[in-house]
Image (tube, rainbow, N blue to C red):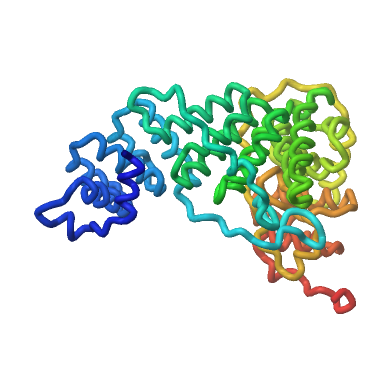
Length: 435
């Protein structure tokens, strides 16, 4: 009945004029209420109050959910079924449902290497085998539970119970495309949170079939893998789950998009390092004993940030001295300290937007996870870049170290200092012989 009513809504010519006429049938009332929710919460609530039939209210709520007009969850209070109400409220706390679709950039590789931007997107459309799995026959739905809410709940149950292979069929039982994509996204993330590396092979195809939420899905899955990181001063063996997760992600993605595979795996290490150093009692280079060589930029970046945050570099105005301090910390292997019981939440700000002609020549790396920074094969140059990023984050754009570095002899360091201090115009022009 619900699908039939939706079809009527799609084809109906009923609008506000009909709603204001003497006769407005069920389809007209539903369409009028849906349109009201699209304009404002106040209008939607008023229109819903005028509808007394529970079936009509459910249809309005479902259509509003499908349209993404549920921010704040106001429409959910008109849903009487407890399970469907819970589903509605969960959707109201998923901010990507309310944002405009992210622009998909065709160019996903840089000549100099590293992430193009802060997104995890493929260079071209990839196969979506999860979308072709036959829709599951729903069983175990609660009495009166809307079919979409039931399918989504069963998919989340499968994720939590370690049955990721069942998720695609359950999500494909969701008829609305937006909510079907949301089901794949949410269940894939939950499967990785519960199963770690073992769930990646099933979760990635779900993400690739998540439509506009593909980048969100891969990004959240990366975060769930990174959350398995130990404190940075833990023994090397404690990093095994993070390493397994990054490797599993790269293995699944490499045949489809090698650049995306590298980027996703590197971001696991970047996010993991940021979380690890936020909890560490001792700040040293111990993670370098456990992680692969490719993770060095990630470890260095988060170690630099934490050194600045905790004051180890707070009185150092000279970039060269700060680089030496960071190098000593990377080489040190102190006794593990007491992990921070309540570390500050890791918040990352991306200070490098779209590439221009000059910045496209600099290699890029993930900056503590969800942002990017310039990197360099020279360890000391890379340390300088990390210190500058950390100083800008923690101490602000006006820090004297940033201003002084604008005249640095190494071009990428000077460029980064000008960018981070908000003074790109202060950067000396590129020497004629380098053009």
